[in-house]
Structure formats: C-alpha cells, structure tokens
Amino acid sequence: MNKKKQVRRIFDSIAHRYDFLNHLLSAGIDFYWRKKALKLTKINSSAALLDVACGTGDFSKAALKFGVSNIVGADLSINMLRLSEDKLPMAKGLVQSVGENLPFKNDTFSNITVAFGVRNFYNISEAFNSFYEVLKENGKVTILEFRLPSNSIVKKFYLFYFNKILPLIGRMVSKDKEAYKYLPESVNEFDTTIDLVDLMQKANFTEIEKHSLTFGIVQVVIGIKKTN
Image 1 (cartoon, one colour):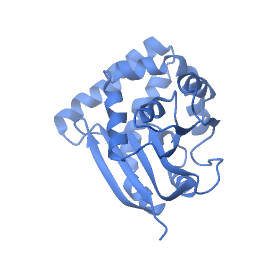
Image 2 (cartoon, rainbow, N blue to C red; image 1 turned 180 degrees about the vertical axis):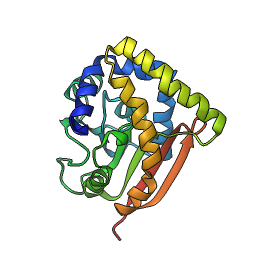
Image 3 (spheres, one colour; image 1 turned 30 degrees about the vertical axis):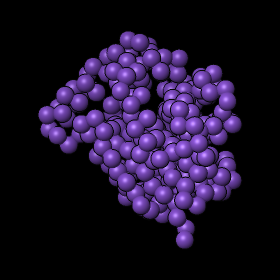
Image 4 (cartoon, one colour; image 1 turned 120 degrees about the vertical axis):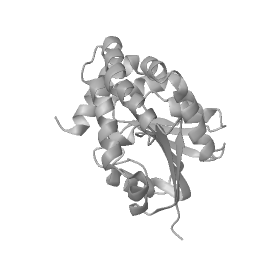
C-alpha cells in the first residue's frame, strides 16, 4: 500500500476517536500548541486561511478565537472532513485534497496552517511548492509538528511514551492496530530524515523562523512568501 492510501485508510478509520485520543494522549497540551503557533505567526481577523491536513478542524477552530472567519479546510480523509464540518459550520469550504496538489487559484490565501500533518505528506517538497503558489505575496505558512527532543533525558522518556504507551492506548481506544503503530514510526522517521527549514528555503520561502515548544517535543516553523 502506498503512503497516500495508507494515510487515508488510517485516518478514515480512527476519525471517530481522533479528537478524544489527541487530547488524552497529549494531556490537553495540544490546545496550547495550536494557540501558541497562531500567536507566533501573528494571525488576525483579516486572514484568509487555508488549513491543510485539517483533520477534524481543531487548528481552524483555534483560529476563530483570533477573529479569523475566512477559513478553508483541506484533508485527504473524508471522515475527518465530515467531523470538521460539524465543528466548523461557518467554514468557507471543506475540500478533500492532498497538500501536494491543492485545487485553488494562485495567490488566494494569506495564511496556510498545517498541524501534525506534514509528516503524512507523500512528497513534502511538492506540497511546499503548492503552498507557495496558492499563497498571496507576504503570505505565511505555519507548520506545527512533532520532533525528537535534543535533551537526552527528555528524549528517553519521550521515546518510551511514544513507542510503548501511546500505541497501547491508541489500539485500545481506536481498535486500529496499525494507526497508533504508524504514528511513532512516522515521527521517528520524519525527524531523522526531514529538515523543514531547508525544504521551505528550497520552495523559496524566506524569513523562516523555527520555535521549539514543551521541552523540544514540538516545533513551529514559519515561512513567508516574498517574490520581490
């Protein structure tokens, strides 16, 4: 099974328990991560936001608290989008789409957000190029993603939790054996092989910022489209 089909199957399968598990497994800190990422990117009520890999819409919902009302969500999983529709009835649109091939006109959005979804892309470089095209001049892309902490003690506990505890709880609640085996594997592989800053630079984003949150287990990477 290729990665695109695997990711769609997994997230369609666990959609009904996704929010519950997200909040449980992060001890509710995921709410803080989204809020902090939006603060760092200085989003405001004038934003035209595209939330890629939007899942059930938690990042978009967080943006509402910053006064953002022009929101479009895109995700590969139709079951995730259905839940997002219930949570965000005011959204301008919800589109089943991959990040690598966004079905929007160039220069449409002032902001793109992705929360814990970049590692699920089958070609991150293509996705960043697609982001660049649909962003307006001076538009921002904001990525919130897991990473392996650099502190050896934190890393030891993090890996134990991610590789032992999280898959066990995930299997028990979601009833999907593959889904919460895939999550820690995808994070481990992603962190050792992917440099988000480098890939954003190659996609012509500038003024790139990288921030670490919660002992370095999460990163926020922000880039700006400037053609002049």
